[in-house]
Length: 567
Image (cartoon, rainbow, N blue to C red):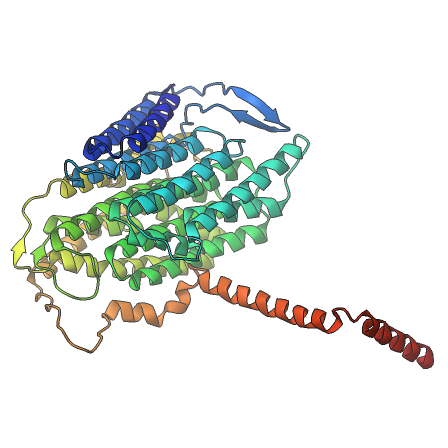
């Protein structure tokens, strides 16, 4: 089977990268990981269309531990997006490695292991006994890649992505154990299901746990994109999208709360994107925005919303790699990706165009595939949860505004203009091409993918009324490009003692309260301090009675006497 062969090749190449990391052939190892990911993608594509009979190794109650099988047709696009994006991302990293580099083979080994873990999670049932194993491998590989890329963790503090991974593994293991102990055809309790969904959100870095992504803002752009933007969201959000049809619908209140967390969290991530200090943070916040929209869609018990959730996961996967490529090009050609209002010396017109398409993908604007997912979700919300439309539209508009500073930095009149577009321009265009093609001709995705979804309606819900919107998007993009080309260049950075906060970051600081809806760190800190306060009060009470049990007895005796006298 193609999936099994792809998993074996990824694991073998990951081991080879670790063993040969000191051999001075890092670039060759990086190209080898790209080849392994590409072969795994080919294996997923050539797998038979008919559902294969899964082989069970052993069973624990109602839960069977099965070998990886061909990915279902309704989910094959997610596996394809994972491996296609992983192949392009690894190729971009491989081309950036100078020949003869030593010591970075471990980085590519961890990245390949993370891709293998994500592919394993899609090749087995979501409630399989191997699911916790794939999540553990992904969390450990993510942390290993972060360390191998040169990021030093904060001393004395456990990295947030490891905490999220531990919570997710415990949560999904609890749900699987409960399902194994239940008699057949028994409905699981709501609490363990919600706990598992929350764990998946934490692993994916989705609101309200978007802060777990920020650990990767210090890593190289493509490393952060591969791990925090591609692998972990594919595992967490893929679990939610795949497991929801297999479980009874959530109670109305629980579903509304989860949808509200996604919608309001998307708005919070858009505000967080306004406050981004560099391009890497901006790409991570945009990915979290899309994750919030996916959560909102998956939580609604509506076929159209379920279709939107599956469609938006694919857009999220490829957006992360495209954004990583754009930021990597900025760092290489402009020396940094800071969004502090300072001017760069080199204009990047093609990279700016790629970033415009990337931002359109993140915010659901016409022209990209994500437009159809946003549209289907809003149509479902109009009949299910109409108030959630407002925060989603606001998130899209603020997210679009948050992407403009990076666009201006690429398109401003620098001293020179980059004419060489290899490899960033070519790779970025290759990643975005499927999204643009599917956005312009959505009917291509119907027979190959969406028609096999459990939520699929009889016909694809895409009609020609969207074409005027697509034309408007094209005209707006062209007009914005012309305006940016004629605009006055940004002022060069000044050496002054006065700190100047750019307008967009000032707006983000003014709305930072909304950002807490996406990053629950402050709320958790307040909760932790409250628990410490209660614990200190209990400790004080225990000190009073510590080794003075007679005092406790005297008080009880006095209370008894008072009660008797009162009678």
